[in-house]
Length: 337
Image (tube, rainbow, N blue to C red; front, side, top):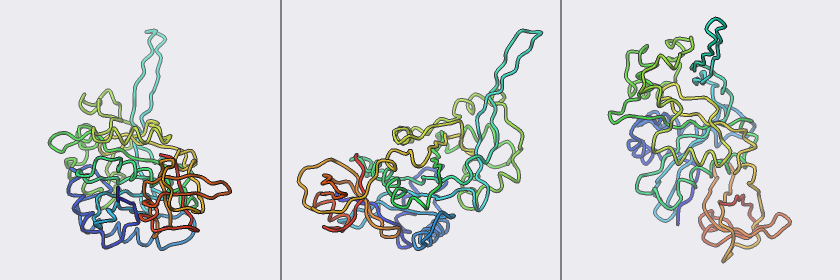
């Protein structure tokens, strides 16, 4: 396998735009809009070029075939959400009420519009070209982000989140949007989702009623998709759960998809990632792992093999060494597959 993850640059606009057109909608972080994608790459270049602690940074990574130079996937990291405009979520809560006269307890679920997750880091924007959805490349895309976090820990918040796309019907609409927010905005889901991707969600603050929404008053189609990921996102949800993320009642305000959260230092791949000095770059047989090297704009990650040698030293296989462009004496981070 000749794929590696690297920092994205302005020259990656064409493959990113082509992949964005394949998403089918609902991917706020990967809109099929050239100007919006160019702006994301400009922000990423600025983030990669900046030293220092946490700020409103936006990192974009791409999956590259090192042999052909083709870009076949992408993912993103946001160091601190809610800094330019509020980061809204719906939080699903239960209200319990008791009537002594009727001797009856009634429990009602409500959706509250909140900004609880403001200031968290976020991993998102993961997309793998349909022709490459085999061989574990989705895992490489997803988990390499956590190696990036571990290698640049001061640039990320104590809490991290991931928003999963909600259920989208055959017409490209969202049952959740139609049942909740769509009633107040006079636009369908595709229009609202595109507007949000390009301009941000401040219009939610301007127009969305602040009162809690009783779930029982929604139509059945909207109720049954609350907190449910799109069928294509179920594997991603399982990977997040394996890393220590959990769904704690937060859902996306547009499509009702689940928002998964975790303590950054408790994410499995962040917690278990460790640096080592390469003392052998010709390992024949070793433990399968993810390997990463570089800093910020020179970050690279790939699958490989490792063998710890003690005293912070490590041996890696030759193929991974070539993909990462490292040799004996260089530092590499690793985590078991």
